[in-house]
Image 1 (cartoon, rainbow, N blue to C red):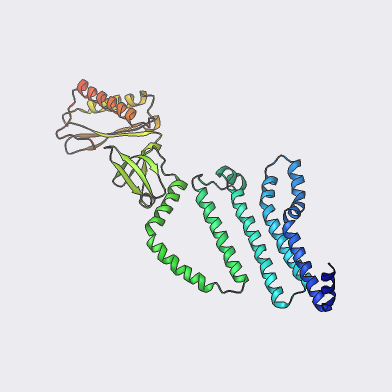
Image 2 (cartoon, helix red, strand yellow; image 1 turned 90 degrees about the vertical axis):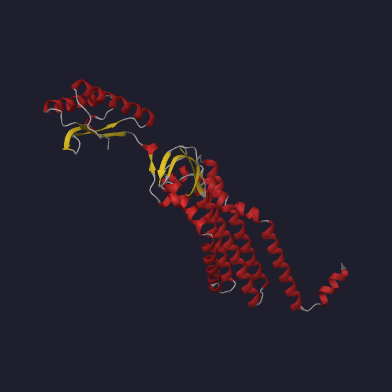
Length: 353
């Protein structure tokens, strides 16, 4: 101990002062680092008190968001205090200031990063907070994209903080991104097609659709493609980009179906026969409980090449195809019965439109 004291006394006052400043600066920085959790707890203590007194969940979320960034801000403050105590030269002071700013940037980035998770953990919470309605399956992609943007912006700011020009880097990334986008063009188109399908929901799994030559039941909607089981049981894999850009007929979302046919009666029929046939068909449709009354159309519309033409149309409130087909069969058989009772004949050739 005496040797240390003697050595210390032999040092010049300037050197002793410098050593003292260095030790103090290191001690201060070490204290800030070791006590960062305690200091952060003191800073956010008011939020702790509020969180305990309320039953809402938002105060707890805010507490989680600010805790880690607060620790980094305290470390940055400790660096600045240590540099001030050390009374370093301009070069070192600038370095410490830049380093402290980097900690501050990282703290802000972490806060924004956690805010993304806090705002959009589910579509219900996002709707309550912002009024935006987004499909649950799209949220992970949105969160990941926003987080990547936050990280990219933070990296660019940190690089600029150290005095580097990022324009060349951005230009290089732009060329690389262009090459990558050209190579992955189909994949990107399918991904955007998936977001369109999930967001607009023109169809869902289990629904019967028709798009171009594809017609069948949707069995799976993936990120790259949609799988459709056709009526002949063929399994068709359609790229999402094709479905997103093409018209899609969704038969499963009908709430009613259209009975539409044109009857032909041979020219041997009399005026009274045509009037009686029209009256019977109108009465048949009007008496059916599933027929939409205001949609009934039964009119003699034309003198065709092969006979009188009667237009028969109505909506049946039967969206299921098998049930609708069964009812249409009943109508057709009943109309044949009317022809037989009235002695009417179908002209030859006779075919429905």
